Amino acid sequence: MTIKMQLAGKTFSVALADTAAARAWAKRLPVTLQMQELNGNEKYAYLSKSLPSAPQAVGDIRAGDIMLFGDDCLVLFYASFHTPYRYTRIGRVEHLPDLSGQPTVSVTFSN
Image 1 (cartoon, rainbow, N blue to C red):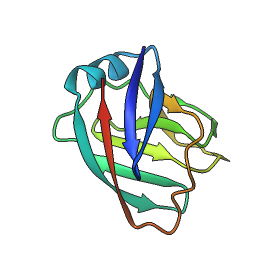
Image 2 (tube, one colour):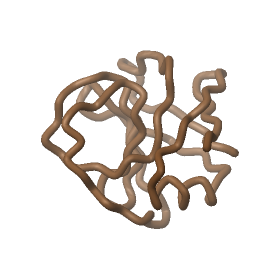
Image 3 (cartoon, one colour):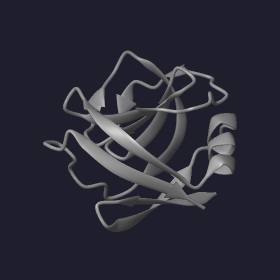
């Protein structure tokens, strides 16, 4: 299943993961989030309602990964790196632009 993500005037296709969290997220759309900068590699936003979570040690994060941290924090990674943290997979977007240097970005997710 795919959804759309609008960012900086461009529309991207997001391939959703086969997880309960991704299915629940898709049912809430459309949603616009103001996503904040963190660690020079990700943007995040807290959701108004929790999603089902099943965190796993993902090891390597790739630019374009969309993950759930805890059960209410949506994270959009724009850099690749290794992590010891546990996340629930939501989906993946290809060809995500570098979002560094932007303290906040507006992102709209829709079906």
